[in-house]
Length: 362
Image (cartoon, rainbow, N blue to C red; front, side, top):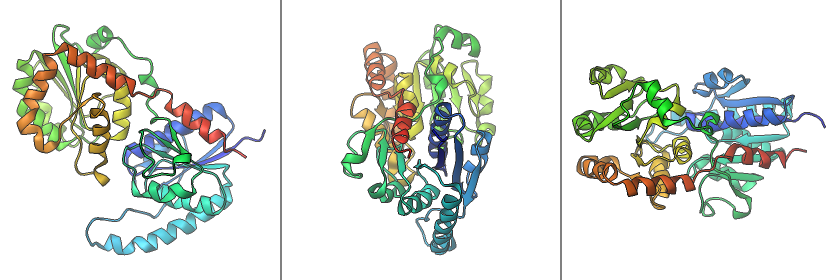
């Protein structure tokens, strides 16, 4: 059999890039001689992240529409035409067997042209509320791999495959709590609270933790607080407190998840999928500043199944302390939240997505 060729497109945020790279890695494990080409937006983070992962990438001159009238919006039709034309030449030259899109405007251009040319396409939708790009592409896609149930109202039902989202492979072999406590020099007699705001950090979560630090320590807790690189200068002073470790980002996510008793996190699609596998009691604080408010919808999908607690930013002052106290003092609730969130995990997501892609080769 000739070795297949794959074009993979997705970007703008880590939530689109990480699944794209994970899918490529799994395809490469199955087809070591396969050829891969990524397509992204030329000024976005995928232009650095994808080459770091060992793959070639080409950039399109494309960006999303802003919510207000701007010069960038006036350029949108020009950028769109430019991206469609460049996508046409990329596809004609590379001749992929399948084109895979994980979201973002660049993937919209490539998958649209691929479907016109009769090349099989696969969409991987991470969120419980799809973005506009994937909704527009769905009619012509051959398969749509999703992470949440009940997406028939957005996508053709016969094309939907419930696979879950790709997650980091190192999370599938979980570290022990004692190993994690030794690594972080934690006190085993205290509960460990893990605070995650994403790679750049989350201002509102950081403000919350600063305000509630004395309260959390008074609950016999120690805190590992990932504040993001933008905020490290503001919060690193709290490292003087022996119960607090403030870091910009975390290298050993497997160990920090093993150490955690309770997790406070944003609810981006990748984070939610990871935390289902980790299976610890979790308080989700969605970012209200993302397209379609999808973080709130992601968290609500879990909260509705009693797999996590959802607290909106505008509820934090009123509800955070009582919510946290309820969890920390109630072992039965901790067990219930853990079991319910684990039931929603999809540890074989990457393999299942790749199985769908392989069906479309030739």
